[in-house]
Length: 203
Length: 350
Image (cartoon, rainbow over all chains, first blue to last red; front, side, top):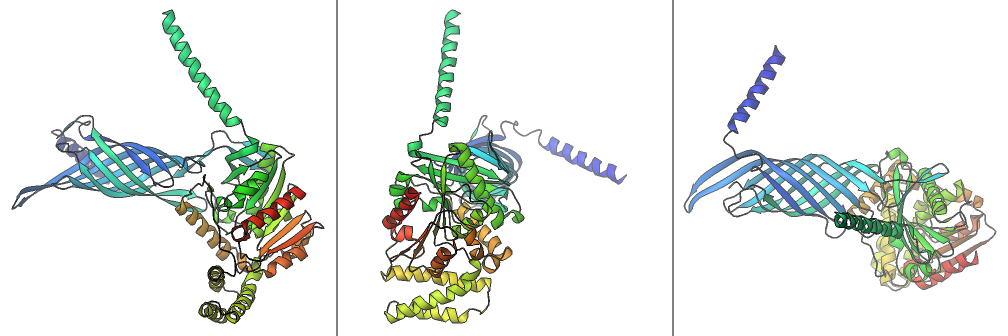
């Protein structure tokens, strides 16, 4: 009986959630795409593309002397994929994906603060010519590389475009942990700078 | 219709030609001017080997970096680029859990024994890639001078010669030897009235450390040795360190390097008792390949006392010892021209 109660409550919560969104803009309207630089500027550089979808949003309107001040808090689903390399000696080439949530505060002057938590992250290192040695046997590895679990956190600032609620630019500092890396977990710090854009604009 | 088919065919042909060109570029190795990064995969570690220089004669100088936790490319400077790479190819190798080496393994896989096997794996890869007739010379600097003997004692058949540059063949003995060399140099410099206060502080440090081995005190003495060498350079007792990294210098990610470096030095020092239990002195006699021992007269980091000990104990009948008068722990930086002359002379002589 207890199980049925829990299931009922879950379904009720989901249906309430669904009802509250019936008046919301379309799925695409609540989704922004982003493209930008990611890397450490000096040691490796790359490109990152992704999407964010608004899950929850709250707006607070404060009455000030100069007029109304609107502050928006959003919780967004986040997914991105990027490739970075150190070009020269190819010891740090890899594909990185992040999946998680973003909390974003947008002030009345459109400045934003972002906090990203990506518990689901994956990094695939691509290696150049690689030879595996087992005993006396030496063989060339086909498509050499190595996979790592790579959760990450980011924080940073941004600004939404004029009249475009979800679009704008962002600048984040990202910390990713690649694990298991050697005999531990490798800390990786990167900068993410890019632009978000809507395919369908919802003001 | 015919035109469309011809157009499509020509596009496909161009793509195939381009792919062919790229694949040719990868395979064509210019032995006269090698510039390659390959990885060696061994026991769950992927370790880069940066190969540079003249490989026409298939002579390779494999460098084992210091540390533990240094990196191979740190040695690619001065006369390594301008002289040694012109004479033969140089293989700058990042050891397990060092430099840009990666992989997934447990702390149990970080031992001197497995690291020595990694070097033998590198030797096998070089022979598989460049031919069984490739001649390999092994050079170990500092900690690399402990890993070198560990490797050669397992199997020296793949190597034509061994170059020991200020190598720590007796990590266990360094604690006591630090106290001796630091006191000797401190007394000498105080007599010469060079940086008197600094050397008096060094004497106090020696008095202050415990009589028996203690890992914290070991690193206190190690830091005193580094500081002492810097002071000797400042007082022009030794030549100023040179570090001309050339035009194609590659900046490695310092966070990755530092993370790996701290990791391995912590494990080898604290969990494997490297500085307390490990010594190859008694086994050096089993190393019978031609050997060259190079040391700086003012080496405080791996005390110069080790130079004669290494030379006396090596089992080779073809061995030589050279002391650089104006150098400390890194003669390749203090006297790069003379260093290159000695290395090239040894390689070409064998």
